[in-house]
Length: 174
Image (cartoon, rainbow, N blue to C red; front, side, top):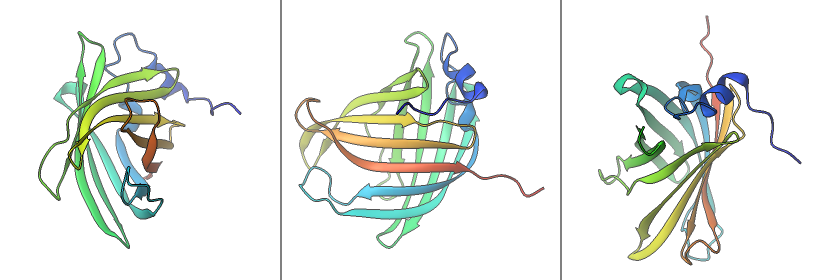
């Protein structure tokens, strides 16, 4: 089964030569339905669910954007921001996430879009262990997208998905 076709607006930005407009399709307000693995890389398969909003704004004349995430569920709430910065020389984005819970930014992950799919990779640590992080943005339309994060503790041979978000655009009630 092939992935759904990317809308012309999103495809044009993702196909741009320098990539600066790769996230233009996402500017706006989104309903976020999020599933998170409660204890990543522990052998647990318990997922927790949240619902809320993501608001995406252009900053720095479009060379960056800021995502504000606010979701709640039976396990509590998650609030954070993701600052995405474009490096025109490297033709790559860095994704930098900070949680309100601890007030600290994670290590950045780096990548870009190709064939309608965003892939970003980096290193981090989890409970003192060095891990790899993969973040994928897929199934992009004008009104929805899928965001998936996975961790690897074996150098990328295997990946455990630990975060799945489906965003649906919120339309103004004019």
